[in-house]
Amino acid sequence: MHAVGLSIAMGLYFWFANLRFGYTFSGMLKQPLSVALVVGLLTGKMADAMTIGAGVQLMFLGVTSTPGGNVPNDPALAGTIAIPIAVVVGLSAQAAVALAVPFGVLGVFLDQLRRTINATWVHMADNDAEKLNYRGIYLAAFLYPAIMGLIIRFPVVFAANYFGQGAVQSLISIIPQWLMHGFEVMGAILPALGFALTISVIGKKTLLPYFLIGFIAVMYFKADIMAIAVIGTCIAFLVRNNALKEEA
Amino acid sequence: MENTETKPEVKTNKLSKKEVNKAFWIYQLGCEESNSYERLQSLIFCASMIPAIKKLYTHDEDAQKDALKRHLVFFNTEGTIGASIQGIALAMEEEKANGAEISDSAITSIKTGLMGPLAGIGDSVIWAALMPIIISIFIPMAKQGSALGGVGPLVIYTIVTMYISYLLIKRSYRLGKASITSLLQNGMIKQVIYGANVLGMMMMGALSASYVTVSTPLKLHVSGGSTIVLQTILDSMFKGVLPLLAVFSIYWFMEKKGPRYGIIIGSIIVISLVGSFFGIL
Image (cartoon, rainbow over all chains, first blue to last red; front, side):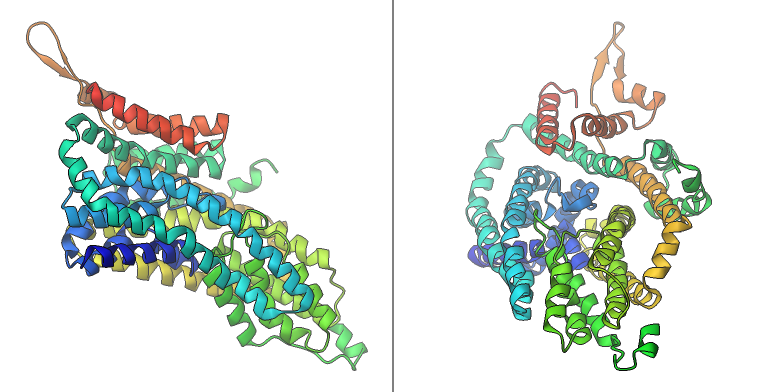
């Protein structure tokens, strides 16, 4: 696919995924694995796209839970910029992760901007309720956030993709080895942020031993994630009565 | 309901399957789209109640306006599990429309009372456990370059979560607010939250062990020509001590200073680059 076409497609994809149309559907659409699928279809390099997508996904696995809707890192912005550029330029998965890091952070600010602007539609809905204008409330809930979203989101990803390919190509050739490795290290540490955030939101220090059980089961006994999920559910059933003894 | 017997002129006004389904779809499609800092999900909650409000208060425009306004107040929860709140609100509106003594504040306080606890369950089960589990299952396929690694999570996660929401809104509408208040009283909901948190904690531990992969390449040359690989020593002490350190330093910082992502991410970047430059990480 032509560079312009791909850039437009990615801009639209980022707009649609972060529009959050479809609660859990869009939650998954934001993930790098989903972005990679679309990049694969558009570029015809499905295998490359999925491999790179898997690498970028690992970094964002910790931030799938967004308590209170506060994203510490935006996988969609990172994915729609890093994955297509990496596929077209032919970067490794590690280099794609390095590219994804800064955009993931930038995405947080875009989301804050969106939720600030969204307050406007609630005030419009207040007026519509007064006038019994049902259509107005639906438009405020669905159409206006969509239009505003297109204006604040599309240009960022379009421009990054359109101008990014060339820039990244020349950048990669001059980047020193230690810096490249530094980005890899970042990708290895960053998931910790998401996990720490979730622990902090669960907010029960008395439950920290369960964290260690999960950690050691994988580290020492090489348990599958699925196995931990089943064991965790069983333990949750067994200890549920503790909730009644706690605090009161 | 007893009012309909004493006052036969009040026609009973029941919601049909259609209004409940519409409420389900409107909220599931748009519950994050119009989310704002001011009142979060208030707008979409109100929009999802519109079909029911139209039906219940057909001949009373003032009652329609009041109903809209009462659902435009601050509201925020996790959308999948939070669908149960919609069911209860629908049941309460239905009773109110049929003459039961239910005040505006009764409906609002049930909603606000439930949104926190249910968000707690939803965040730890739907987003912190279910989503990473499903993604983890498909990552190996994606690594091998298979498109299935992208299709699988999208289809499975969407269907599973939407099905859960659908069951919850149906069931909570049928049982009404009585069921939930009794749940709150007998501590059932506390148990569910506690269990969800236990599962969430274990998943965070397991995922940290799998995906926080920081290690050190540092080698110490000792006299006599032999070298000591630091990572081997660390592993023999406690496997995964560096990932554990990473998670808990960030956790500790957040507990002390609040979720200041800018500083945390900045520190991670500096530590990574400096560590890489000196060959420590």
